[in-house]
Length: 316
Image 1 (cartoon, rainbow, N blue to C red):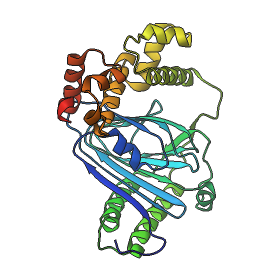
Image 2 (cartoon, rainbow, N blue to C red):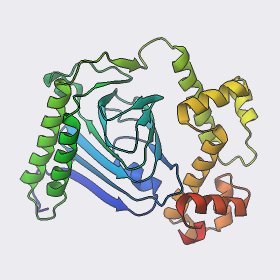
Image 3 (cartoon, helix red, strand yellow):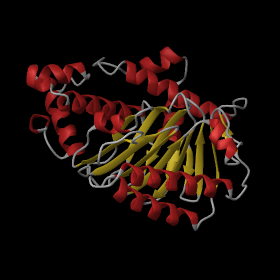
C-alpha cells in the first residue's frame, strides 16, 4: 500500500499449521490463548486493522479452536459468528449466526469455535457506540438477536473489504474507506437488530449456572499456572479450590466440553508448540522443552503431539 499519513495499521496472515503465538498477535489489544481441539491439520487466515478509534479483526479456521482470556481492556468488543459447522460456545452459551455478542472492557472470554468457523470482531469506544444508538452494553458479557439477512450481507462485505485493504496497490484512502464501510454497516445492523431481551453475565448476582462457570474458570487457571508440574493431579486442584471432584469435573465439562485432564494435555502441547515455533528448540534439547511443559513421558508426548498437529515435535 502506498505510503501516506493516517494509514490503518494492518496485520494479515495465512497459516498452514497451528501457531498460537501468531494467532494471539493478530488480536492486538486482547490476550487470548488458543488451543487446537482436533487432529486435523490446522489451516487458517486472520486479519486485523486498527484505524483511529476503531479496530476490526476477522478470522477463518478449518479446525475447532478453544480461545480464552480477557478481551481488549480499553474498548468494548462486539463479536459475531459469520460461518461455521454448527454453533459456537461463548462463556457456556451456545451462540449461532443469528446472535451478536457484546463484551465490556477487559471482560473474560471463553469460546469453543466450530470447524470451518469464520468470525468477526469490532472494537471502539463507548461514546462512538452510543452515538450509533448502541447504549445497552454491560460491563460483562451479553448477546442478542441480529436480523438473519444481515449476517450474509456482513460476511460478503467483509470479504470485499479484505480484498481492498490487503491489495498492495490499494491507496490509503481506499483502505480507510473500506474500514469505514464495515464499521458503518456493522453498527447500523446492530442498532436495527431485533430487540431480543439481552442476556447479561458478569453484572448480576451469581446463579447456579454462573457458579458452574466460575468453578471451571478457577480450575482452568490453576491448571495453566501449574503446567510444568509433571505429577499434577485433579485431586490437587480439588484440594486447592476446596471443591469435590464430582463438582469440578461436572462444571468443567459443562463449560469447556472436555474433562480437566484433556484440557491440561492440550494446554501442555500448545505450550510445547509455542516454544518450538519461537526457536527454543534450536538452543535447547527437545526433552528439556518437554519437561518445561510438564510432559514427562516423551514418547507419549510425541505421539499426542503428532495426533494433534500431524507432525512430530522434531519436524515442526
